[in-house]
Length: 81
Image 1 (cartoon, rainbow, N blue to C red):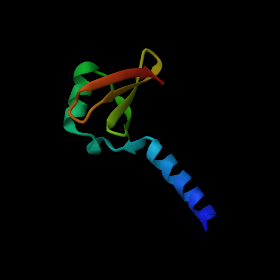
Image 2 (image 1 turned 60 degrees about the vertical axis):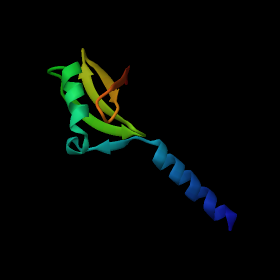
Image 3 (image 1 turned 30 degrees about the horizontal axis):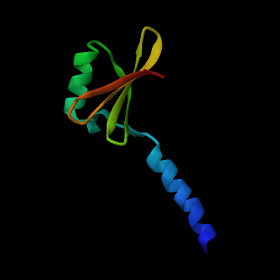
Image 4 (image 1 turned 120 degrees about the vertical axis):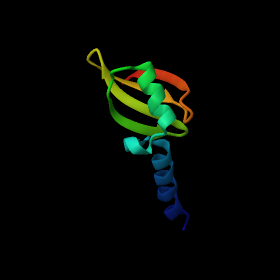
């Protein structure tokens, strides 16, 4: 019986550990405003939520980039994908 629980536990861990893709309408307005203020004229190609952070993926100078924000719009970090 315990063998049946192991795959289920692994599946739950994988699902919760991955980023969740979001529609722009599901992103808090404070996050969108903070992104537009920090990166004016830049278009988000994809929004994701990982844990409590919202990540905007975008292209800058030919590089795929990501910027993370808290729900209140506080900037967390920027990274190159």
